[in-house]
Image 1 (cartoon, one colour):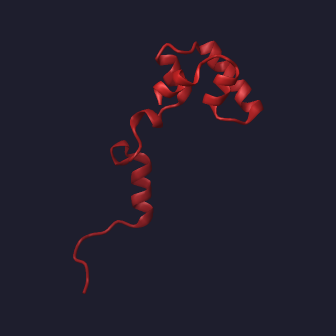
Image 2 (cartoon, rainbow, N blue to C red):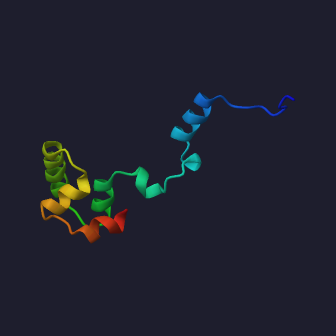
Length: 82
C-alpha cells in the first residue's frame, strides 16, 4: 500500500526546524543568548557581561554559573530570565 501524501525528506524537515521559529519546540527565550536577556532585563550591564564572557572562556563553564561565581548575579536572577 503506497502513501499518496507528499512527504519531505529528513534533511528538509531538519532544515525547516532549524530555520523556522514557528517550527521550534523551544520557547523564544531559550533561542536568545542568556547574556543579552540579562542585559535587556536590567540585571546585568554590558560591561559586566563582557567581563563574564571573558571569564567563561577561561573557566569553560555555562554563563549563568560564571555570573554567580563572579558574584555578579544570584541564581534567582539567572533563573528568572530563563
